[in-house]
Length: 329
Image 1: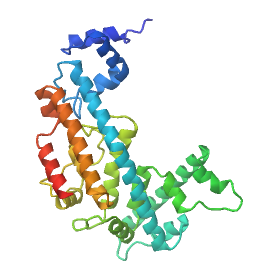
Image 2: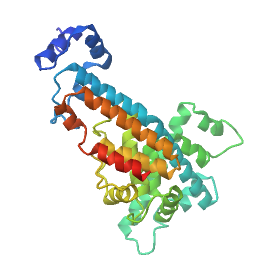
Image 3: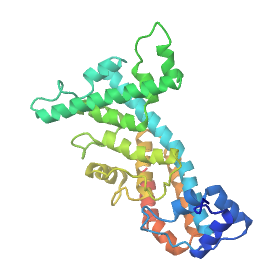
Image 4: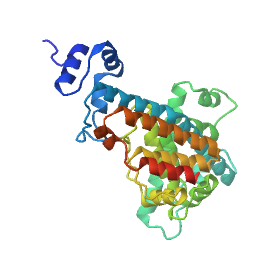
């Protein structure tokens, strides 16, 4: 039986024209081939959800949207890697200093919430929750070690393939944790340890009663990082998997002078990244250069699509909030 779902590039171009998208010529045909009909057109024809279609009239606009998203991911990648590495190292150094050890077993005993170290008066169901989280953490770390060993990661094989070692130190384990696993580890720390790590980073804790910003911001950044790593759409924040808590919003409002924060637009993630760059003592010059480059590629994108598209894809107060952001650095 013939595969009736298959369409050649020429047939796809006719299909696009039938749906109101002007496309013609060898150049646009090659763009369609390079970006893919399903990854490109079908992936970028809506904003956030499939019910919110963008009113494209030409393939030039679709290609401009794809290129904007690509430039955005390139801009963000280095900053995300820097922040992830820095946060891991600050957390690692703080934990090892507090427990006076590089043993993962000492971390489990002294720094991770569990049934036995729950604060006095903690409800029985909460104690069991702590213990369950600790066991899940142990399992996820062991799985990460096993996966790294299978892949012959020298950071792990160095310890197991040497008769003089019998334990992988914390610093080696932190090297192989995904950002999601790292966020989960932070969430399992005792509230006292989360406060110590938060203060070592410099997070404003005035609105963070339960010391949750430490790991919730990591979860927010993890969603963005994974979208970049897997070449998913970034500019419309469809990657967002968590609802931001009130402290997550309030901290950035206070620290960065923002009128509001809701994590519904890419601008809010730019603000969060800049907050961390500021905490990590990156120079004002470098942070402002990062913001200006984001402004530049966004302005270029805005001028390359029709106003009906940019009205949806670029938040109306984005540039005014970026001016506030630059003044807060």
